[in-house]
Length: 144
Image 1: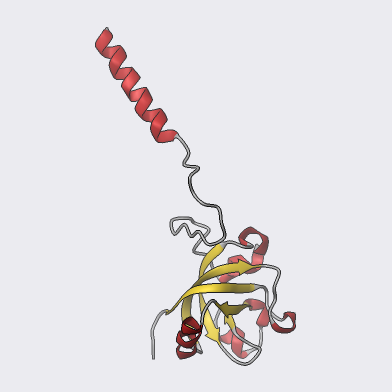
Image 2 (image 1 turned 90 degrees about the vertical axis):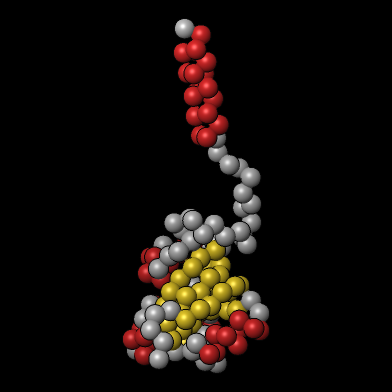
């Protein structure tokens, strides 16, 4: 009888300790939880629910085009070619090295990581928001 009680008590304690929430995570803007389903999002999700991702770290893929007063990432190449700017987002880089890397990836599909700003629409308010403080940019898909 005592053995059963000790076994049940041990199982209960183990279960409760595993079920406790971890409140030690930082909630600041720079913290990136790569396991979060909200981190890796599509540009279409950003267009349709900008408030959900505002001021949050994100990872997106799309077609990058850089030009004077027109640095943006688009859902696809045709959106850029047909000036469908609302299907894109203004991009701004955190440092010079990333900007130089981005220039080598101009007019290519890329993966970028940064913070989403649903309130800044870039030059002349042409885009659907901004991906700012970009910390990563890499080529995506087939490279010519």
